[in-house]
Amino acid sequence: MPSDSTLTDPRVEAAIEEALSTTEVGLQVAAYLNGELIIDAFGGVADPDTGRLVDSETLFFPFSVTKAVTSTSLHLQAERGFVDYDTPIAEYWPEWGLNGKDKITVRHVLTHQSGVPWMPDGVTPELKADWDWMIRGFEEMAPEYPIGTNCYHALGWGWIIAEIIQRTDPKGRKFTQFVKEELLDPIGANDLYFGLPKSEDHRLAKLMGGEIPDSTPYPMFFRGMPHEVHPSAKIFNLELTRRTVDPGAGSITNARSMAAHFGLLANKGEINGVRLLSSDRVESFLEQRPNSDVVDKYLGIKVPVSRYGYYLSDETPGMIPVITPHAPIVWMPGAGSSIGWAELDTGLAVAITHNNMQMGPPPAFVTIAQAVRDVAAEKKGALVS
Image (cartoon, rainbow, N blue to C red; front, side, top):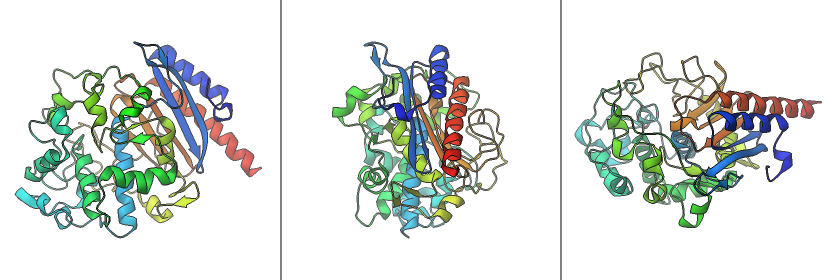
């Protein structure tokens, strides 16, 4: 049972049970409404080998849902005037401009249109854990495609954006320190980690699934997510992986802390009495990137990407079972179907974390989302009345 009965609802509990009876092993769901935590529920098994159960403190890998947090961290720098989205990255990070990358702007990377979508050649879990090696790898790359080409930067995106943050921070902090001090601590997301401390290992759920496919219909698939570091139980259950700072796909969190991040966005830049982003800036996150109707070369589908690094709501097949189509929502999916979203019209923010990786949103997640929305609607109605 949830540790706080005021933070659940029978409908949410029933939806979690449905999920556990179908595709799930262990999961959490958390939701904020107008900046207030209203749901923190969970169920199932964190580690089938030991029988350890999921509770509200259990930690999970949300994979690319991480990108939303790193995007927001960059927007803090823009809010304070330290980053201009349309400035060439080389003005902040001169070595980036090598090999024909001098005209690529911050926004080109944010929107996955930089033409530099790959991971460095030869990457391994050990080298991925070496920040300097990774950064040198990106510096030495030449563009694969012309600027403006839609090609999802599956893993490499995170290091590029995080290095821009580091290079523009007047205090010269590492990304991990910056994001903790400037974003996570102020919003109360105390259980969202970039590089898990060993002291927290006992809280981490054991990952299942995500097996590396032998082949793919997209020839460049493994340049974005090489076999050696592909999001999967084999790679992400390694101790080295959980110690690695991976700003695009490797945060470790519980649903409550990830929902707090999306709660900041759903509440138009303010949470816990602290304003970090202007309402106008958050509203601008709903703007589509250029050429949004063009198929993404990496993913093989049209992808509704914002000009500010988040996903948006449209009718892209496979993306809308949980996300209301054509609604003012910013969201991010992760490998294995973790998800987080912020509804800018309702003030609702939700995160779902789990440990059984699956292709495509599990049907039970739709039931969970509807249950949470029902609870939120009732609470909003009670406040109005």
